[in-house]
Length: 114
Image (tube, rainbow, N blue to C red; front, side):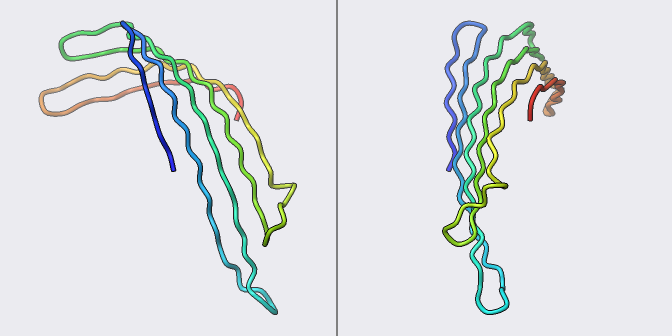
């Protein structure tokens, strides 16, 4: 399950993306099958600003904060060593250029954290 919502105001855009996933896998064991399962959640908040807009192009700067949590289980028992909570921030620059019926997207970003 995932969702995104964004709100523009002037040359600024504020966006929030959240996701929540569950996954399951049955592993053949020696005497019985073993259920391996996990949960993953993420949240991404983004703020961007249009730096330049032309008739056929747009350049924007972005700042993002990312948070992710994963948990894994064997049966109903959580595997403590596989529990992770990570966070990061990212700065970026994006450019979109319209070339007739085609669109060229380019971007560069720098991220700190995982």
